Length: 135
Image (tube, rainbow, N blue to C red; front, top):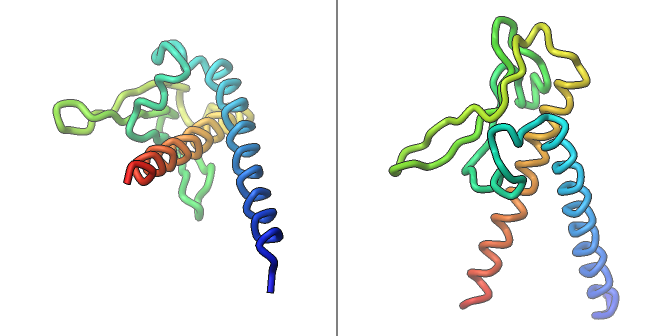
C-alpha cells in the first residue's frame, strides 16, 4: 500500500504537469494569435476567451478526417457568442479557398483552434472549481 507521502507526491507531479501544459499552451496560443492576425477582429488576446466556442469551416476536426480540407469550401475560424439568448457565429479570420491553402498555414489554423479549446476547458475547470470552493 502506498504511503500518504507517495500519494501526495504523485498528486503534486500531476498538478505541476497540468500547469506546465497550460503555461506552454497559452504561450503558443499567443504566438498563433499574432501570426494568424486574429487581432484584426478580436482586439485583445484575452477577449478570445469571451466566446462560447470556436470552430473551423472548410477543414475537419473530426478524428476520422482530421485536418482534411473540404474541397470547394473556404477556410475560416468561426467564433460563437451568445447574443440575446441565441448563438451567433462570427467570422474572426478568413483564409481563402481550402484547396489553395498552404499546408503549414493550415496546421497553424487547426493548432490555434485546438489550443483555444484546451485553454477554454482549463478556464471552465477554474470556474467550477471556484464555485465548489464556495460551498
